[in-house]
Amino acid sequence: MECRILSIQSHVVRGYVGNKSATFPLQVLGFEVDSINSVQFSNHTGWFCLFRVERNPKMDTVPHSYIWYCKDKSFLEVVVSIIQELKKATPGLVYVCDPVMGDHGLLYVPENLLPVYKNEVVPLADILTPNQFEAELLTGRKIKTEDDAVEVMDLLHEMGPDTVVLTSTDLPSKHGDQFLVALGSQKTNGTSSSQKICMDIPQVDAVFVGTGDLFAAMLLAWTHHHPKDLKTAFEKTVSVMQHVVKRTFTYANEMAGPGNKPSAAQLELRMIQSKADIENPSVVVEAKVL
Ligand code: ADP
Ligand code: PLP
Ligand code: ZN
Image 1 (cartoon, rainbow, N blue to C red):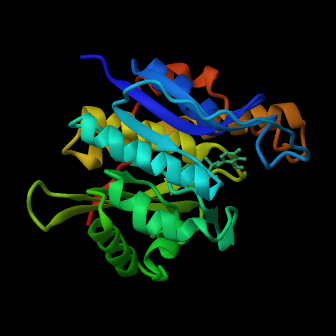
Image 2: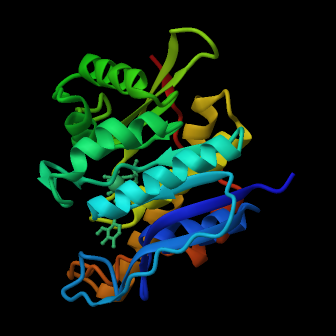
Image 3: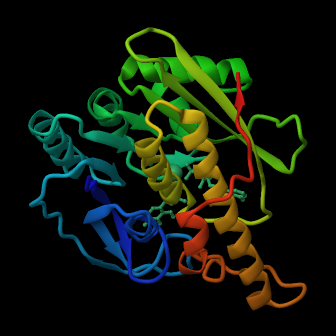
């Protein structure tokens, strides 16, 4: 059966964030992708310069699923009403929300978006993919231990979504500081219980941009194939991420030359070169059931 995705995210002329980070990998996996560009930039904000090209929210299609990124309250509210209407009109529609608000204590959207996310957006989401900072903002709880993370994911379930994934946290990994910890929780059908999983992800020594967007896209794809098996969907998602960031890192270092740190431009995700890994990811990281 054809699966159609409406992806509402930013667009960049050069490089890979937002829709540029999600569309190709989803198409490679066989999904039809309709995209709305919430903003159009020359490149992502980690570069030294940025041009705003145009803004053109337009909508004329019935989607299966959603992902998005947004910086503007009125636009966020318009999208909320669109999701509400589409959910009514399309039974079975899955809405994936990456509540892009900030990272590591830094808010990079206006503060007035937070109540809209909390009260209107998150309650509509089926799958939510915040990082630690975003999960803390949404719940008002700090995450200092694994137990805190579990509690925060339960609070997020109470707000709406049946599947919650904390894409990256600062929690210490049992394997050492070369690993970053991600956690997930999926409600068990029709009950108040949930399966909680945790993953220690080998960390590559560079800052990548667009990885959160690729993560959300891959989680959407793999939960579509494994709707009741978050462990498998999570493992495939994180394995794609590993293949892509490692390849990107190798290429970037080659371009930078010995002894030089790669630039943001050199660290743009090597998406096309990773096509085979996206299509058929060998599982290189295993999730632990908590
Ligand atoms: P967010 O945008 O939600 O803050 P990140 O982009 O930090 O999320 O991370 C999303 C995913 O991308 C992580 O779960 C991980 O799989 C991958 N990732 C990002 N940065 C790195 C890195 N430096 N090393 C390894 N994996 C990374
Ligand atoms: N969209 C734009 C235009 C950006 O500049 C960024 C980050 O710089 C993002 C989205 C988010 O990227 P990530 O997937 O790393 O969270
Ligand atoms: Zn993010």
